[in-house]
Image (cartoon, rainbow over all chains, first blue to last red):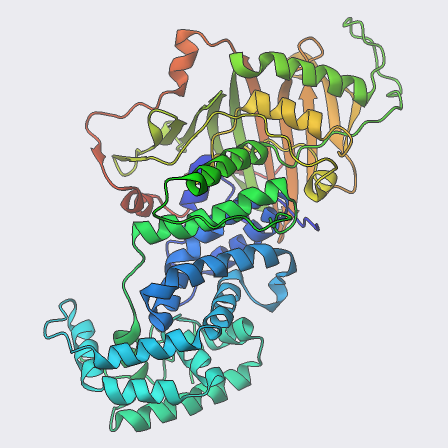
Length: 233
Length: 351
């Protein structure tokens, strides 16, 4: 094992609190702060000598990874695939290369590869969603309601379009839409050039828009929908 | 403003609910099995035979096994990377300071430390005063302080605010589970993750790769959720014994620590983590551990001053987390969100 260091860049803590307070306050859809990314890499390196430190990464990223997987496969398969994602990441942690990206897209990349092994479950998910009647009262924030209503109205064409996408195109589209990853992060997650991410995303979105009809592309300049530092199309 | 972007529509249609606590427990349990196994089977945590999968609804052998692994993981993790080299060479020029030891070998010190820790183990409270400095290679460093106590299967840690008052107080005991009190949030929580006494679990023969690389480390950040509290004295003794032929610490003379004579052991130059351990030449118990590492342009230096306390009623009270009456109880998750991303720190000059 190559142990490259011990401790956290900018945040060394003790006790259970140390594991807990390192939860990224600004994490979640839309990317991560540079400090958190560096901290993740430090924790991952540290976990080579102290495997239990990997639990800290789990605590940070489990909610986002789970929701991404559950969004693609449904809750029935998500718990097992999420567990396999973190177990696989733990076993591969020695091969993580921080020069190729941060830990978060690395985890999403592992999750995406495992999702690909459950294509039938993903197809079942789309079929099930297509059969599910629309929720007449989605509740929540206005934007959320509008999005849900819009989605419900177009769910059939949208789901068919998603199902018809090639797997590489769908991976890029859903990593951005559901995972909140930037172009660079998707490129790191899938080990492809950023230009390939852009072309795949463009192709996927064009097909989805065609299926949705005359949906305006108000958010076309914010590919992950969360603004911030992410690259635009 | 209505959201009509195609990506928003995809999100609205596909995004599911956040994970339930039960799902979190299940997934974490599976991962914990693998991590715990990594202490026993260094590397990827894969045992020679595939372990039976824990079922979330099970209360039988699978769950007991998982619990046992957590206990083992906690114990071994407490000082999993510990290692002490056996150097037959006599330390040159070690002076006689009236302790009857003119020149000592690492092996001799290790043997005595091992015996001292074994004797102190279950009947002594280890008190660690921790100072952590973190900062860039050149420039200012942030300093954080905390105090921890470990006694058998009980553990407590108090993290200080810049003014020196408790900011976070946390403890673990078999009866009470894990308790976290946040003074900034004026709230507390209880989490019934199993904390178990540190039992000696013998690992496989040979030297784990980590132990061969990294010297003795005081794992002051244990326990973590899903892992048991380690008994510091017994864990130290156990790991010293297990790693005696694997490690990288060597006697490097003597120094005064807090006004008292101490034998100094240092890590080798190839170690990625520079570590110095001082032990009392009288009791042979560690009295100070300093680790220093550089990573990503930052330096982390942690000092642990260790006192060994008799388990009097007054000292045992130090292991109890007091919950202020005016504080309200909240679930664990919301309390974590009250905790800022950076612990209260004050700026000092880098070491």
